[in-house]
Image (cartoon, rainbow, N blue to C red; front, side, top):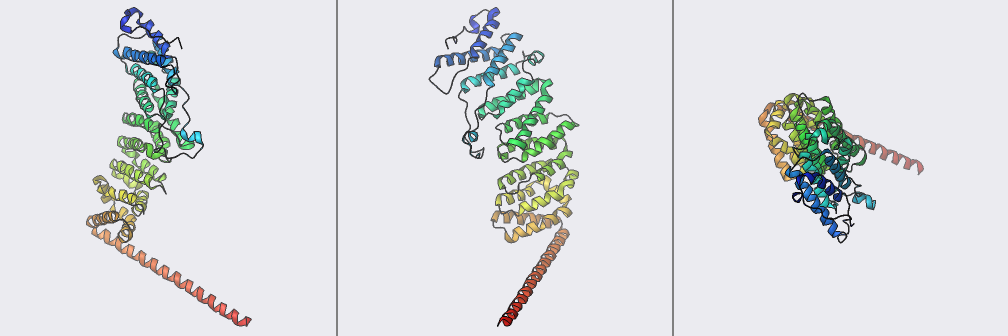
Length: 430
């Protein structure tokens, strides 16, 4: 590796020679080193690191616009360093069933001392006021953006953080790339939801989308609504949702805050993917539901309240106390309570049985106490309605008792008949 030799500093050469020196420094940085062996090429690695630092400083200081040729060569150097095959995920190496992604130790890229500076250089180039997008878009093109998106599957959180910032800045600066970037992110989500259920960068991609959705103009384009229905709502399905749920919930809530008419679509979407046996996931859904309902208007609430409160009733009586508790906490939200109060004649009959069931038989004291409070709230809200629900509930229980007694009586008769026949047969055989 004798070719890697230190070059003079930018400040030590005349201004006229700096572009040429910039190109030579880029060449030095194209060399790749083996970082798995810390004792190998120590001097050369340090020369490259110092050279990268100088390049970052040169772009950052704005000490002169770099020529088109320099820009092209710089993107080639960046590409040579960052675009690589990512190592297989730990579960792929062993063939074992993958563990919980939250529990796994992330793989940290050994070449990060160089890689970080290459990303920093790219970021400084993208955000620089000297960078003309008309020129830069020739090098930061669709192919470059796609390869950048592929890297979001890196297990190294430091790398994903840089990628998130860079892609967000590219989206902001290169308006021509915006539809393409949205479509490419869409495709990553489709593959994740419907094929692999494995991807390290879903959270970071959703973070970028959070601020993109924030900037959507009204009335909202049909393309954006389709993205909500086809990509974002189905992201509630995969098992590793806990890793990216916070960012997903923010995106979903942004949509409803932008266009309140989407609340019904979102609520029905949540109900479609509501977990059946995963209690921790249910707690997440209930938290998100509260945020969505916070932004929901009365008309949209009325459209989905029947299936919604059937599901909430199931949550209220969950034997997992965190699910029941989280569902009962919805009544701590003033906006949600006002929506319920306006539609109490529909809501209370749906959940009355669940409230009674909790009061007479839930094992958890906190759930019992919260249920008593919610029941009292309804009683004070509309005594007449409450008493009617109580009467109907008592009738239903009475009917159920009658049916049960009738069933037991029928079985008793059958048992008697069988016993008599048995005795008759005994008499014949004697």
